[in-house]
Length: 451
Image 1 (cartoon, helix red, strand yellow):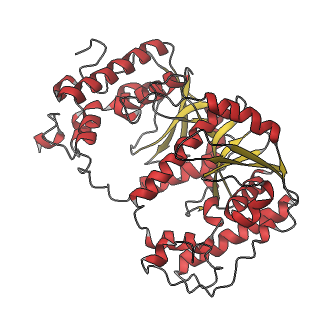
Image 2 (image 1 turned 90 degrees about the horizontal axis):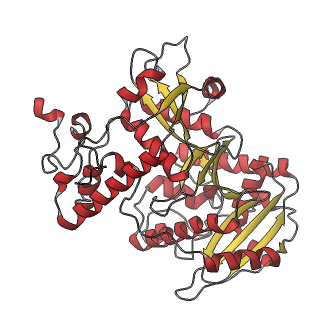
């Protein structure tokens, strides 16, 4: 076993300094008090209200061929980050007036990326892809940005494809913001009552709708067309050949990162569990029963999403061995957790009591080359007169040591997948292994053993 691999899965990190972040604690506590846990309506749902209703109502699993298309789109979206250049925030998540959005890229303009088999001229977006235009205009209205770009990346089976950029000027933001809120409320009411009769016709009714094909919906095709008031008075777009040329050149030079041996950073915390999860994907743990902690997590998330737009975004790792983008809060990695304890959390207790959190934040910092991260912690048994929100700043002075441990665990995981010797991987702690679906085959000691 490589010497850099620990004997237990959650050893204390090499070095970490943890202090309360009082300014962020106060800021987030104020938003937490008014944060709503009501289901947010996603901007993507506003593009086709009736289709969104049936997706929520039926909750069918996504078909494998559709998932493959989604995965290809995700890969292209991630490549966008390497194309647009510095100074542009990626996958910017926010919440306004009960609407949740995730902007593909936000710099000067709002940037929305779409993929497909053929290009679309700027003047064709309204007729060919009104759903994409609704998304862009809604993002601009909620983010208070008057300029938006629709970027179309062709995805042919072979060849480099092409890229087109349409620039839209979005006037009357307040009016369009009100229209977006009204659309969201119509969908929210339909979901609440289970009655879609007040929603406009589905634009996919005669275009291969999966719900109609399986007789899952009640659409007749006679519903009134969607007037799309949010697009009223929208000026015609302009093409941006300068941006197309620059980004196309960058895209031709882009190379996707090499395959890494871990699927997620969490695999580095519990590598033996990661090995068996990939080996036995059908084995799953039962979800925990719902409880007060779930509401607290939802409220913490809503409070963070309600901050300034751009606070929550992703950053691309500096190293090819890191699996995908890292979520950040104001440019630094973060985690949200809830601790169900009677006493308020203290900074000096966090590393020994929850070393797995320190390791996960440390690995995220190592991936980005950023020494600082934050833990947003909810105090689960907080008395009514106290605020349950705490923010702690973690600083890792030796990212090199954390990166070496990362590579040691990843190397051991790769060797184990080659020869099946799971004992070389550090065992999960007993409290974590107690609910593992791979027990007792994984060989980790478990709290079950003492029951």
